[in-house]
Length: 102
Image (cartoon, rainbow, N blue to C red; front, side, top):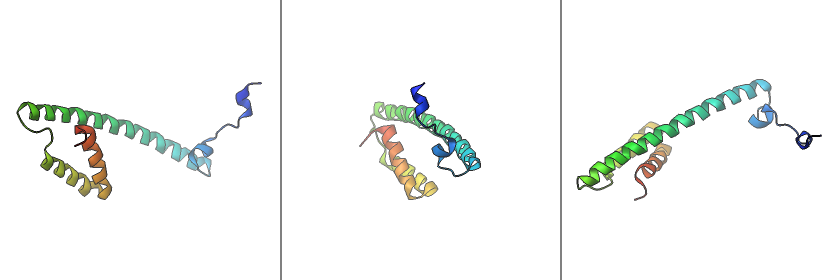
């Protein structure tokens, strides 16, 4: 007898927390879509980080400062206006990823 046969198998209802198979199917499909969106978001953040590195390099080699605080305030405002107060936190995280801690 296989030892794994002793453990109960997880059903889609268990995994999703749904109470019906139909709801479990909807949740499973939606989670797959979220996973795909998350992969795209991560790719875009990585692209943003690369573009930011080019900007910082150009600014530094021209004798400027690594960070442009007025530009960062514009980014914070843009995210806050689009997403509300949590957008500010998201923008701060993006800025930290792209330029490091200041």
